[in-house]
Amino acid sequence: MSTISPVMSLSQINPSNAPINSLSGLSADDFVTLLMAQLRNQNPLEPLQDKDLMAQFAQLNSLEALKQIKEEMEALLQVNLSNFASSLIGKQVTTTTTEGQVIRGTVLGYEIRGGVYYVQVGEAWLPLREITQVSEGGSDGSLHQANL
Image 1 (spheres, rainbow, N blue to C red):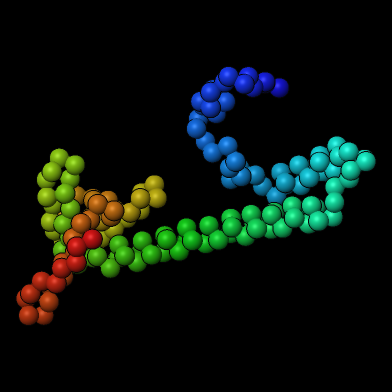
Image 2 (cartoon, rainbow, N blue to C red):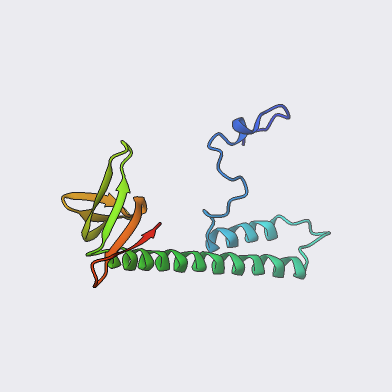
């Protein structure tokens, strides 16, 4: 076991700067293991109170519910991105490259690579998040624009 000197800096204790109180890596099995260790090593003169045990189980249930909500929100985001990307097919889009070049053209399709959405404009594949303007030709030949 490592010791922490009172003069150690935070960067020495946590060199990756990861959140110290992060529970993202803990599973329900880890929680049960910790709880069992706590019960085995508790002070027999001051045993764990029922209310403390119930509070820990409530925290576990909340953690599991939050993880489920996060997963569902991520899935919903993917559906929304797919819907948005497919709605751009046939529309005029504008983006600016990192070199300052403005690209305008009609979206021909989209694809997902490594979790990143790209739209095809001519021969180029542009990241969806970099689209700055969408235009659609109206029946009278006018353009309807939306700046993003």
